[in-house]
Length: 197
Image 1 (cartoon, rainbow, N blue to C red):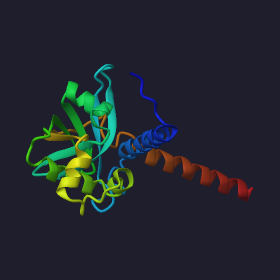
Image 2 (image 1 turned 90 degrees about the vertical axis):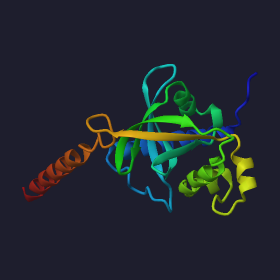
Image 3 (image 1 turned 180 degrees about the horizontal axis):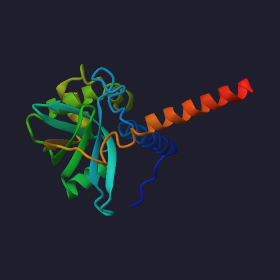
Image 4 (image 1 turned 180 degrees about the vertical axis):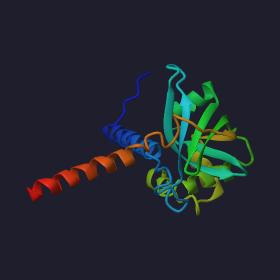
């Protein structure tokens, strides 16, 4: 069965893709903490292996930390590529504003008694995203309505196992800042010399 995607849905997906690329770039430039606040939006980058390609993928997702475990949700449900990748291989890395960790992911089952409370925490941590895209205020919505709206969402729990270091993590493009500064200073000095001649 073929499902048609409306032009509005396609535009929204394109906006998400562009926003995702921008968030990954911020983390790679060493700016993962920039604008990453509980009162605005908490975003991490989830590094996972493509279930078909085997290549590493980087996906920014909203998250909440509860009892030293990291929770995130797939608002597109089981259609989300990153969710399907985690189901195929639960070994992940998470880039948080304060560090980079290896871990293992598992789905929180729908019948888990804590699911609704955990979902609420993730949606609150998403800041403007929940009201903007889901049309709900996670701080005031009733438990019953939250359970109804979030039923198709997939909630993931990540157990961080060890801190990571070395190349390939957040900040791998931070060298851009000194290089750019050096080039700009060189251009300014060159321009100053030309004016004096």
